[in-house]
Image (cartoon, rainbow, N blue to C red; front, side, top):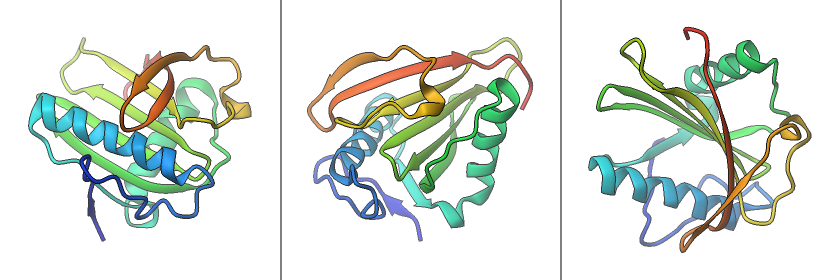
Length: 153
């Protein structure tokens, strides 16, 4: 069942099993606000088991690019295209959010982004990354990092 993320009334729906559910819901709402304001796109998510293809694609990018496997179970995912860019998001039980930005035209931007919910520890598998801080009214303090995708996916 899909969930339209409301960034005006933040809800933990679908994220209740996360110990960081409130902060993760704020992080998800922050992404919804960004896509609505920048692209007029309505950000919707599905339970991870219903969005297995998206979860598998993101996991495959991580594995092929950096040999990474995320230990936390995925809770929700979404995938969509706007302005020639394929976007995929996976929200994990730990409070981690991973997005893949993949420009469909050759030579465009392609990257994986990591965002940590307010208050969560850096997962062991992301220990090599440096995280920048960003303030958000919806999500508190977001710590983020990324890497550039080098291969075709």
